[in-house]
Image (tube, rainbow, N blue to C red):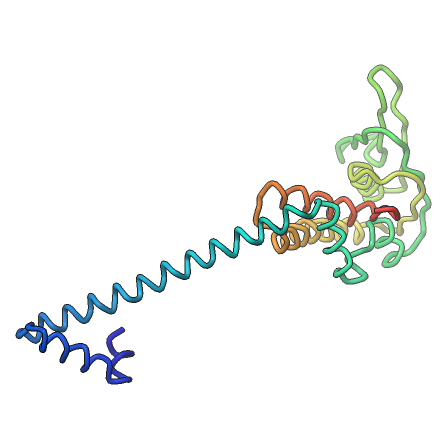
Length: 215
């Protein structure tokens, strides 16, 4: 640190001042200069920390005035077109429409891949005691897709490609990317962990199912 001061002649000046005020030993003057520079740097660091804390407090005060849905809309408007595509829209835009399927209501269940009879079947159950809706698929990959889409809350008609293995892999990557992206976006708008979690959840919901027109 003293080298930086020396570049401006400050070090020699400080050493001379200590000598004038009665510090005869050169090593002691060096030690006092080092301590002076350390305390000076410490002082400015503390000032900077206070400034940062004040900035964070101002940011929190400002964000308290916005609801989560208002923050989400602000983020949504800045997204690229591809990021605003819901999962059904993304599938329709990027994959062939070979197999039309109607995903029913209910909680989806996928049998094991080794199941001799129902490996390519997804069962949708509604209430306990009622018979599950059986949905037979062309292949195991299609069944995995239908199951995943059902778990995401996607219902109704959707067209899937055949074969479907590439979509299975790409959908997994898309969902992982959404998780990372919404966390990044939420943290860019808030420092409060609770609000970050709520904002990320709403953005994820929109990216998967689409933003409601009245939102």
